[in-house]
Image (tube, rainbow, N blue to C red; front, side, top):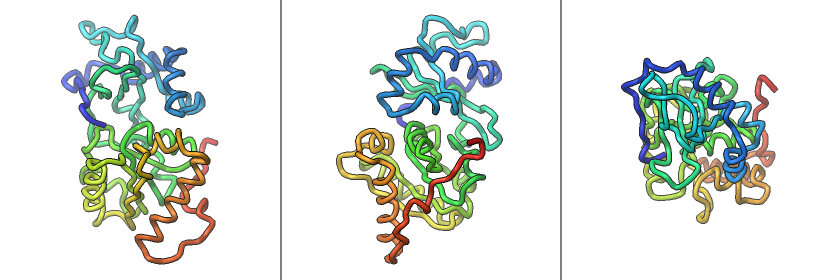
Length: 248
């Protein structure tokens, strides 16, 4: 993410669970249409308690509520490893900037970090929609809520994991991939930096545009491992990363 705005000074003013419930109840046609364009299914919206704020009703800042802070935005809860909501991120569904807003600016958590207890392998992505795309394919993925804010506390959460870094397909993403890999050297079991096809922007774009995206992505994972390790990898690449959620 870039140009993220937040109002962290008000962090004690809100009941986050109340906000999650409020916004989730406001999911409506225009929100589902946006999610569909991003390849995100209704079941995923339910699983991750995704919400929406059209800006006409809602929470008002002057009464310890939010007003139009998230106006016309898809709202995704950020939870800790125990599944407790610690922040909210809103993504505009029109052209308004900034594209992303964080409510509190809680930078020490990973989006979807509760998945880490279920898997030894994990994909580090650039944004929440990348993670949601991979979650739908039963691939364990996380991201920092704020783009280019990965730091040592995040690296420690990935201790002893086999980590695949797959960020945006531009120069900024490539630089950030190298920086994250360096931070992971003392904590992760192994690290691999993945390169997406030239015409693809990011993981979410890959899963929206590529034919048979899961098979293609698994093939890309396999090729990344072969190139990095200079060793042949088992042909059954689907055994590398997919997992079955505990609540399935």
